Amino acid sequence: MKFSYEQETDLTAADIWQYYANIDNWFAWEGDLEKVTLDGDFIQGTKGQMKLEGQPAMDFVLESVTANEEFTDRTPIPGMGDVYFTHQIGKKGAKTTITHSVEFVPQNRETNSADLKFVAEIFADVPESIFALEKAARKND
Image (cartoon, rainbow, N blue to C red; front, side):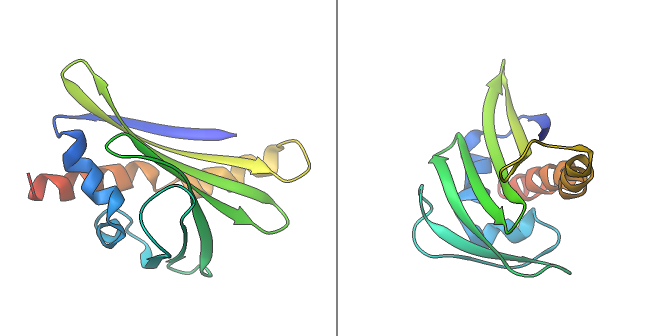
């Protein structure tokens, strides 16, 4: 089960990428972020931990990283499955696209209607995070 939101901008991929690759910049676009750590470089396989307001700290791993194009992190939810957060930068004509997706892969079962509510709650602030990302990147443009 996957939800995505895409927005076009006139910013460049490099303008946006600096807000992905430097986790200190995540605070500019993740409104409920309290703490984030990364146990190494921003490359595939690096593990980290994130703490969101009102939530326990969550471990994650960078599943894929392609500079100026995309990164995906995976957060395991014990007893439930994995949540994948994908952040993509693309091109559509003269515009740059920013796409954030949330995908839930349940553990040892098919998805169901309860999963829809779970993923919808996670996804609820994703469009706002893209607006915040674009705003932050414009300040440095």
